[in-house]
Length: 359
Image 1 (cartoon, rainbow, N blue to C red):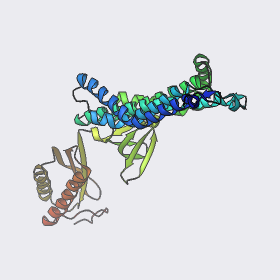
Image 2: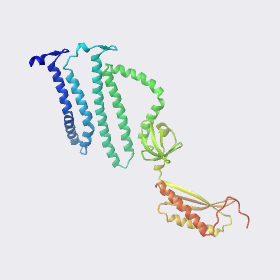
Image 3: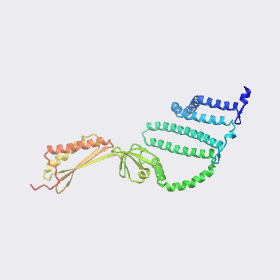
Image 4: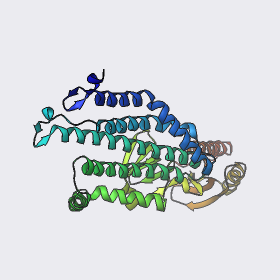
């Protein structure tokens, strides 16, 4: 039996192969249990400083990437016990097979580590989103989404640099110097994208609008559904989904309808020049009384506003709180119905746009 274990294949003893295979099988069989145990230990540590820490959500997010990272790392460490067979170490495009396999293992290890970090960012963002939903300030929600995406981009770039350094042997200093030169050229080519990125920071810190606000900018009007790194998504009144570059949202004149203190409504009633003054006075008084009885109307005025060639003009103006658009439209409609009904009951004829003949 000892001779079998000491038997050499491709420069390694059978016992070494069995040891490596055993380690890999062991970590494959127990990686779920090990990663779950590590997640529980981390949850307990975090819960001491963070009373509302959600251990179940934390475990659900990191167990799978953590287990994969453990399997990959343990396999790489175990494989270092073996000597690479010289018989298989042929050259591929100036690189030996050993270098290629080592680079691939390093890429997989770094990728699983970055995956784990991205899951941690998702967990922190989810917790902050839950807190933001409990507050009245909707800007907290969009800040969480924005910085979650921003941090993911940064972590992804760091992961790429780690792969370039550890897998391909590039010096990070030289790499950053080269990237700075290339970055300057890319910045010139992607100037508009960078302007949109900077505009996104302006939106989040200056807060001209937040997610859920109804805005009007240029020819677009609708509710803001998402604010991204490059653009803002708006659901228009006809239910289309419009993407507006952040630079336009910042540089253009933007009307945040959701932040107005009141909604103003107005209308003009043109009545016949043959209408007696007493009926005009009674008509104005009736409109005043009606608007006084509408609970949503905070202030109003009804004026005998003008005398024109073809009609007398009654001007109606009223203000409501920042209520739902459908409710405001209903108030306007009911006012129009009352205006026409009252004019008919009083025998007041509305002008037809032409001058009335003399009596």
